[in-house]
Image 1 (cartoon, rainbow, N blue to C red):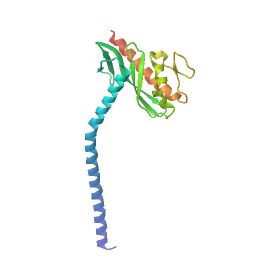
Image 2: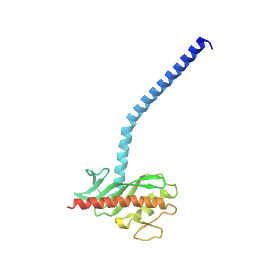
Image 3: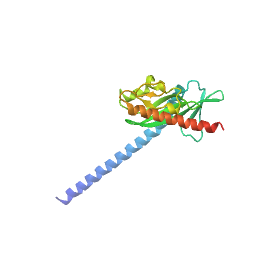
Image 4: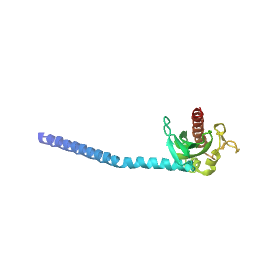
Length: 189
């Protein structure tokens, strides 16, 4: 190989490297710009989705107020009275974390829950969002939030073929109910 061929190869590699570096830089600038434009809109959409979920869970509330020192917690207010707490309720299901919001009375009873995000099995675990399963949770205290296979009015009947999902949802809601009951007890003092 002649000296000139070596220079051509080096020159060619340099040009390819420079071209790749410029492409990466331009792509980075485009991505950063797109993120800067779309992220505020996405954040606003997340806030709206959460507000809509809270209104759906506590229909009687006139407003929702964030609770100091409790990340993601909101008090549902009617008149000048707290009628519910809406709190995050996350638990590990069959397909990963199930992210929920739970509405709990100040007395520590379940009102309802809403699934925000999940990866449960279609046709089985995803039935947790249906009213037939969700309605079982209404007005239950933490001690009654236990999954059973044989139906009772007292506990939570497992979804057919989705016991892990049923237990995960119940555990998440139960922990939320317990947390609200403990918090409410400190508020009454």
